[in-house]
Image 1 (cartoon, rainbow over the protein chains, first blue to last red):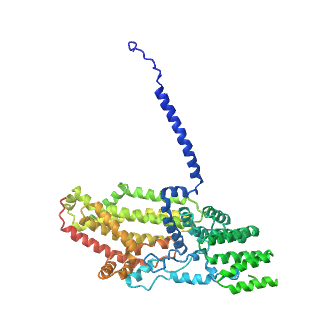
Image 2: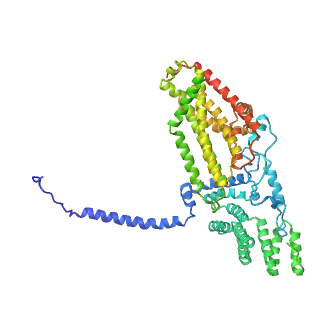
Image 3: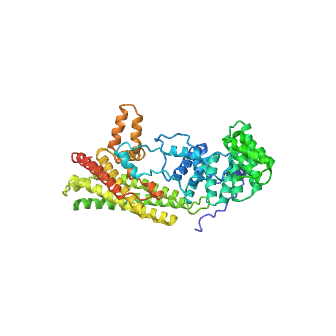
Length: 308
Length: 259
């Protein structure tokens, strides 16, 4: 070992490696500054939907409808038409926001509002998709499938919620998903979650009169906060009118719903003038204008009110 | 019959020596538990989506185990040339077919028991209820259906050259029947002749595996099925299984075994 020549460290004096190191450092800094802005943007996206949005892009909307339908399947406990059954394609989905006893009980609805009875019978017709069995295979096979039309009840409606949550994450711009989920969350006395979900919907759909109306209803019925409810319904009314001005053809029955609910609230608060203004708006689109007219006349007379 | 049981025993041992079952069970358990840990709207009582997912995974896993195990039985014996000493014992070809079938069916049964025990635990932990009758009916019907699938796959293994092609064709047929079987007669009515008649004939000839899928009854906690209906469905499965096994034997008894 002693015979071996001793080697000392040779100090690098060439500037090349230092320049390369400095260049790499500068590049890392530059990329860091660029990425930081993007990371901030990613963080601002809807929380769990961000990944799905990044992976699936706009294709996620196709899956969103599937999950919304899955919620409907759950609502019917598996009794649901397949693509092979003769059922209208654009089926009415309002039944998803109706409890069994709602079909008969409409005492809470303001006068002049659209009746739920017609929707219910329409839904019954749509769901009568099972024809008479055509052969013994068909007849016997029905013993192993759900063949009776029933809706979830007694708190079991919560079982639809996971599918609605996923549907909302996949397509956050579908107001119906928020409306259905919020309806059942409120029914299950989970008002905070319902409000949070509706507000999440409003972040994606800031011009949705349906969402403002439902949020107002939540404040009116659950939180008993009349001022907040009135403000939100006024906002819903403005959003509806703005949508009409923009020729987006909003549902006139929804205007009727907003105006009659708001009129009822204003009447309770003693703002008769505003209530009449709203009823005039409602009368134009109401399916029962004569009932609205009677209501207006009662308000103008200032006589004793009947319970609406 | 002892010979048949001995062959079946070898097939069952093969199931627990191979990793297919373990992989599928772990995958099912991991996915189910991962999904179970997700809280939707802070509601711990939501259970149906988890039952639905778990049952779907059980159905997929059971089909994979049944088809993958069965498809390689006879081709593997022929390729390794162990079929010759087996037949020289002496063991008849019918006994080979029956032994392989019973082994695969029993192996699937064991796998199903493990899967359904797991499913029962998951379901009971969420719902605090044990719907034993419908669980057992669902498991029995699924096992009956697997008998038809195994017999079909065994027939495929003496008809097709490679296990992979047999397995693929079996998956397509079984998947097709499960999805379309119930609706073929509706499709037939919309088709022009002679296609309509052909589809109708297929509808009456195929084994209606979709009858045995009672996932909806289990998931939605519907009333249990009538035992008479389960018995009739089992008879139906027995008829198709016997028919397919006899067909397998007819093809296999004249088949040269040299590869």
